[in-house]
Image (cartoon, rainbow, N blue to C red; front, side, top):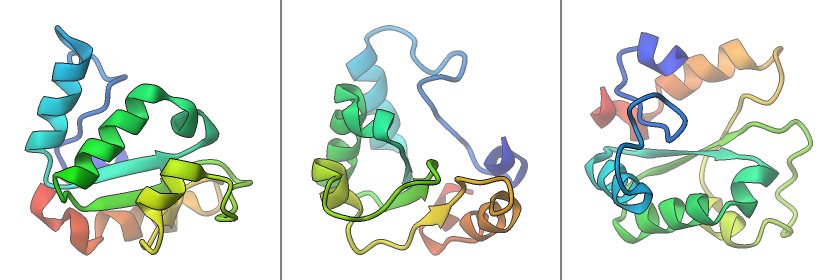
Length: 118
């Protein structure tokens, strides 16, 4: 919602109307049309086969990938496997705690990688 208020077009599989028809086709179409892909870094995201497909496809298409940390205990310690490879070396935004959320959301909205998505 915060990014939408900032003027961004947002697609998420959990939003109403985003997953009509075939799931994989809907994901491929969304990633293909995306100016950038925000990866919400959580252990659940890492374990999801569909999230892995989506992030890998974005990487293959050379889409800007912007990691957003959503769990307060995230540590880039090598235990994140494929997700660690996708987000390695990228500037990330930490929305994992209420105290960080406002300033980090504002910084995310100003991210250079997201500029074409406005």
